[in-house]
Length: 342
Image 1 (cartoon, one colour):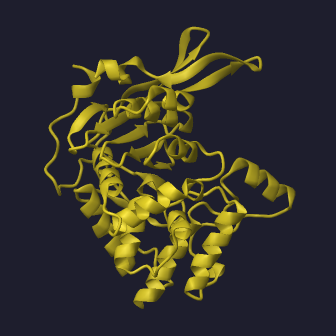
Image 2 (cartoon, one colour):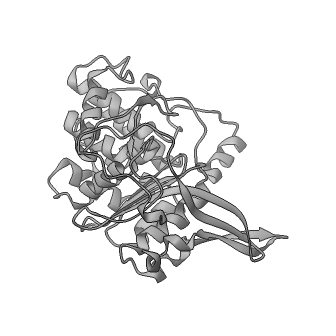
Image 3 (cartoon, helix red, strand yellow):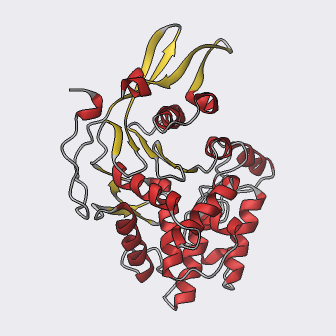
């Protein structure tokens, strides 16, 4: 049986995805000196503009945790829940895993100030900036972890602001039973088209909802195709206009959004990536071992199924394998993922 047909039939809409060990398959090879030195397993789904599955590899229906790739959906949920008006730059930060640059910190502060809130009212886990260059500079200055520097602070600031605006208790806004989190869960189920299989705690301390890779990618397509006046359309527009706010200067996701016109994209820890075009073509990627180095080459291969120009994707399709300070190979998607194997 081929990698693209190893799954059972799709589950009925609204039903939670199955909780099982995912049947991942090889999706990326680490090639050194002409030999395959390492293999990354994972799963990939490509949706056509009509929402049908155009290509799949691995297990796209098993329950998994989207990690930060779920933030655009949560941002929509916050708007639906009554998030006070924010400009596009600030709304992009709500959906961000930011690098901790000064513009990120300043915008998170601005979101808090909108509601008369202070940084010490956040409940996310203090951390150093996520961006390596920013983190190094932070340490050179003798600075330590803070809640504002943590990469999810935009989301947390917006959660706290929404709770305050709705008159909900802000002290326990991260409790899965809090009215805010119940509304966010409802948005996740609406946009993914399926029930939530499990709820746990993300690294930042916020509730994390388990869906399937197929469901997550379906949600990305819904945002990418949404009308401009809708909550989904507002989030998509903000993310497209300010990709460096969603990630950071030089980050691969921001560069990909700048390279592919109209693309909506968001990464997540443990090797998760979604990307969707304005006509509804969309891809979802999960790297089984969580290796970030395999995420973008596999995403590039998936986007090739959507008809994205290969020359545009070329800078993202491979990563050099270094030996003795010089390239001696590449990390690239497996041949089974290239369009001519579809």
